[in-house]
Image 1 (cartoon, rainbow, N blue to C red):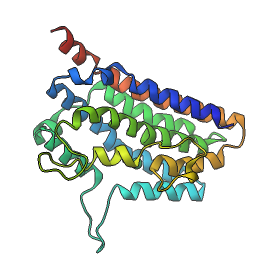
Image 2: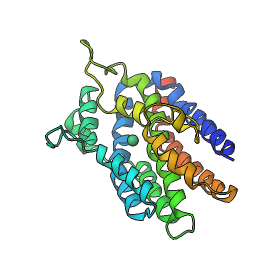
Image 3: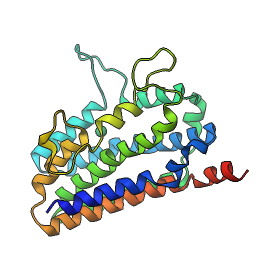
Image 4: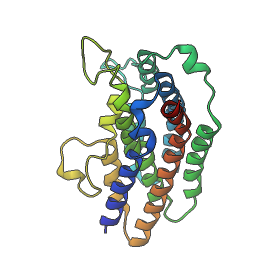
Length: 252
Ligand SMILES: [Fe+2]
């Protein structure tokens, strides 16, 4: 039964990777590339609200606990319990290391499209509430929007990020503490239903285990497919807004 959703996910991932912005990302001027990352930060800031909404809305205890653990990872502490920089602080630091100034990051306004994508993403979750299968739709949305596709986005953006940041300690480039971490730790890594066959689980796989457990019929599967398609379209819409900067580089 999971074959349909697995092939859907594989197709949507391939389609996002083949977005013109990503296939021609090497042609972007550096400032235009930074502008994309600065807009993308607004979705990263929104992820906390998305996770908190899911925690309040989920009644499935095991799934709620997994979501809670993922959210808490956003605020790491050392072995003495002292707070370390949050993932959003690490994102800010990566942006600085990529050449953005604090002023640019903090004062660039959210575009109307970024705002639409952010609000529509939240609304997609609200729309699930009150429905019979709300639990599973919320997990399907969260896993696909906030984990699976995030890792895909960062793997595509990494083509340029890696020009100035390294994936591990290096003498000539600062290490990426945010993008590379999420590229690895959010990744889909295996088909739905195959999570237990592998070693350490990524966030996509942790949520995937709950998704598989709760998919009880083809009707429920169809609801998950619908919500994943909608999550994909929102991401696609977000990256569409930057196609102009691509054309400017190509045709100037
Ligand atoms: Fe994650």
